[in-house]
Each structure stands twice: as structure tokens, then as C-alpha cells.
Amino acid sequence: MKKISEKVTFFGSGPVAAKALKLLARDGEIEAVVTKPKPAHHRGDFPVLSLTEKLGLKTYTPANKQELSELFAKRPVSSRLGIVIDYGIIISSEVINYFPLGIVNSHFSLLPRWRGADPITFAILEGDVKTGVSLMVIDEGLDTGKLITQKTLHLKPEITTPELTTQLIDLSHELLLEYLPRYISGELSPHAQPHPDRVTHSRKLTKDDSTIDWSKTADVIEREIRAFLGWPGSRTTIAGKDVIITKAYSTPTQSPDTKPGTIEPVTEAHIIGVVTGKGTLWIERLKPAGKKDMSAAEFIRGYLR
Image (tube, rainbow, N blue to C red; front, side):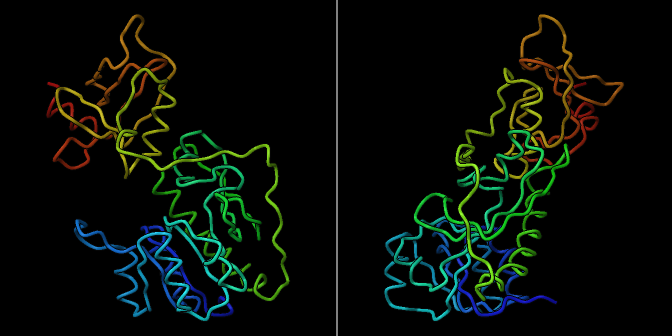
């Protein structure tokens, strides 16, 4: 089995980071983990902190860029290489340069497409047919560093963000195991990102993104439902009930002269249609507020008779 050839320092905070760290700790030596502190108002587990406690890893929790720089001014680790995945704090040049081999970011897109905070969601939102993982030696820019390698993943038309995230975590780990030892040994030299004219940027999603705008096309709304599954969700009101739509498909036809947002349940087909700005969205599954995820047929029986 392949292993990372020397100890590293890991930077990461979110649930993606926790899953990646679990794999890295199995197949390499983690000298220390740098993660965000648990907010005072947060209830329940904080994924990376829970994992580092379970694994007994040395952990640091600077809250911002300044505290991170102050931490590394104290020279807390001796590893030559950092790995960053799903961290969420800007890393200064002082911290980057602290590591003789720099800090490698495993970024879940084919850079320079989808630089920024949420490349997985935006690949689905835009209907991309492929995405992938880029291993990049970070600089002070926003995902502008030189590439060690990239690998493409072709997307199934029905894929959701949770499903794609799992696939990319696994692909990322494969690339780290294969290419980090070659980078550490000097066999590979990072190279500039290709196609600078094709740069696109993703952004961090907010709760406002969850409200469905029925004036959009059915195709766009269907992609949003798959992209926003888990968080922030795709929310609307049906029969006076707040719901999150969790599975749907679109067709180009719709009732003539019908206002977008009009509900058209088809009881005999056990499905709920909604008129959009162009086409019809057909709801297969949804989650009413305070209830479990259910089929459209169950919702029709409970709320639309």
C-alpha cells in the first residue's frame, strides 16, 4: 500500500477536511493539525476537532489569519510540508514559507475553473460534464498556485453534491498518495495553471440561495436541487407547507399561460409538477418542515387531497 513518505502538517476545518484527514492519518504521519476553534454557540461535534481527539493528534486552533501567523512565529512543527483541504482561513506568505516544500492544497476542481470557496457545488450548478482534483502548491493568490497534477472525473447527469464530494475526497487521497512522494523527492516540478483566459470563480453559499425562484428555467432549478442537497437546500411552499425539495426532474413542456410557481399535482402518477419560467419541474421527493424526507405520493396523500 502506498504511503506518504514523510510527516506533514494538516490544515483543515470542515467535514470534507475531517474525512480527508482520516484517510491521511491512516496512510501517512500527521505531525500536527491546524484547524478552526469550535465556536461558542456550536452544538454537537466539530468534525476535525472530534477526529484529532480520537486519533490523539497534536492540534492548534488559531481563529484567524493573524493568530495563524503568530502561531507559526513560535515554530510549532518541524515538518517540511503542509497539506490544506477545506480550511477556511487565509494563509499568509510567512506561514507558506515556513515550510521548505510549501503547502499543497487539494482543490476539488480542474483549475483554473472554479477557483474559490465552493467548487463542487458550482460544477453541478453550471451543468459541467466533468470536474476533478488539482494538487496545487499555494501562493498568496486565490487558488492561483502552481500545479503538481490534476485528474478528471466525469459527472453523471443525476449526481448530487454529497455524492460528488465523496467521490472527490477519494480521488484526492489517491492523488496525494501517488504524487506527494514524487513531489517531496524532487521528481516532479510544479507548473503554471493552464488556460488563464478560462478562469472562473465560485463563492460561498448562503441561506438566501436556498429559496427557489420559479421564474428560472426547470433545468436550472433541477440542477440547484442537486447542488444544494444537504445545504442550503432548495426551499419553497406547497399547500401552505414549507418544504425542501430533495429530488426532481425537468421537462421542457408546461401548461400555456400558467404563472411560474403554480402547483400541478398529478395524483394518478404520484408526482407534483410546478410551472417554471421555462418548462415544468416534477418533484419526486421532498421534506416538509419538521418531517422526514418523503415521496411526492406520500405528500399528496397527506397535504394535497
